[in-house]
Amino acid sequence: MNLHRLLLQRAADSRPLRVGLIGAGKFGSMYLSQARRTPGIHLVAVADLSPKRARKALLHTGWPADVLSARSFAQAARQGSTYLCDDAMALIAAPEIEIVIDATGSPSAGIAHVLACCTHGKHIVMVNVEADALAGPLLARKAREAGIVYSLAYGDQPALICEMVDWARTAGFEVIAAGKGTKYLPAYHASTPDTVWQHYGISAEDARTGGMNAQMFNSFLDGTKSAIEMAAVANATGLTPAPDGLAFPACGVDDLAHLLRPATDGGLLHHRGQVEVISSLERDSRSVFRDLRWGVYVTFSADSDYVRRCFREYGLLTDASGNFSAMYKPYHLIGLELGISVASVGLRGEPTGAADGWRGDVVATAKRNLKAGEVLDGEGGFTVYGKLMPATDSLAAGGLPLGLAHGVKLKRAVPAGTAVRWQDVVFNANDPAVMFRREMEKAFSPSARKGQAAISASAPQRLSGPGSRSRS
Image 1 (tube, rainbow, N blue to C red):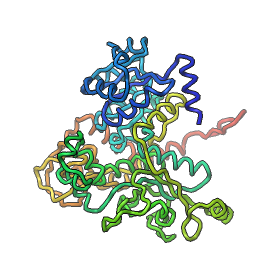
Image 2 (image 1 turned 135 degrees about the horizontal axis):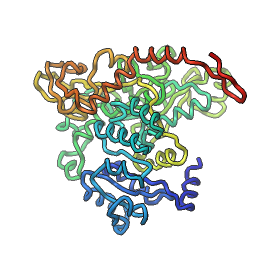
Image 3 (image 1 turned 60 degrees about the vertical axis):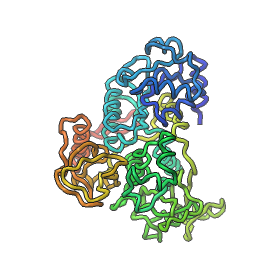
């Protein structure tokens, strides 16, 4: 990798990458801790609903107070300092900034921020995987059309998985499965903010003292965050979910090649090329031996006698047939690694993962029997969790995306474990996020894909290479 060398050159030339961060929460703070130590980076501004919180985060992560004295974007750019504000749209519009990081976690805000970046010609790194799961395929398309880079955030598991998939394919392997680890039991789907801490083994009082958000932590436990992240991976890599979504098989790193292979070959997968999340707990709550709770993995196939022999010669763990093997990374460092995305986007014009199709969707699913008149409370709440579905199935069923299942009232009862549909809720059709999602559903519908294929087939074909001529 040459990113650090390129950053050093930027620093030597006094041409640092000019970055603006939206959201100074945990992920944003982790990036702040590293950005001040990274050559070739100038954090021009931080926008947060509470500039005081942003200032506190910067000081807490080691930034000297005198660097936070700027009173405008222009002054920050001239002085090499950092401007704190509460206006994300002003940050995006500021000519002094070239790369925007969205670390808000709000799907509707994320959509608005990406569209503003398209308007103002700013590259965007989306820590906001919630927005990506809701509308990433269309957001990425809009970004490409605007000539900007739209990128998943390195350090978060989806981008790390995308990197492993790219490694395997570039080396000539077929990717059989890719995903991450988590702590999972089937009962967790019904977990609420009132029950979440008992599953983590801490008291509600200790959680409050530590400033831990019960609803956010519950979204990791009830399967929602896994569904969101695997939708992002599917849409960025071409891998697809199983028809029933994530199965969360209990699996340690030594069993990846054995279990994460197709059922037709003795494994657990529905098909080759699948996204799947593995659990660090057996179904009886025993810990899995050598679990991958914090990491990511990819399984791949040899598919030839010669490569199977190479697997043996170089000590790879394989299944019994010797045809399937795996690579994994045991940890991910969240915002501490985000600088990889910033550098890749700013120096190479390349995303560390971005949707190129709509293959996975996250549908709001009832945690319990829901009654007509109840108001859904979204990700990690008391009413619904997010379930991963093939996008074609979600579209056909009219599934309500999890990212829009907040603050909407049910028109009819929905049984526990059942997907909530658009027709089950009262929603504001003029809400910008709703309108954008509906636009994506039309743009990526089967009829739209058929129309695009017909246009491509009828378009004149061009030969590549010097001296080539078009033919029609």
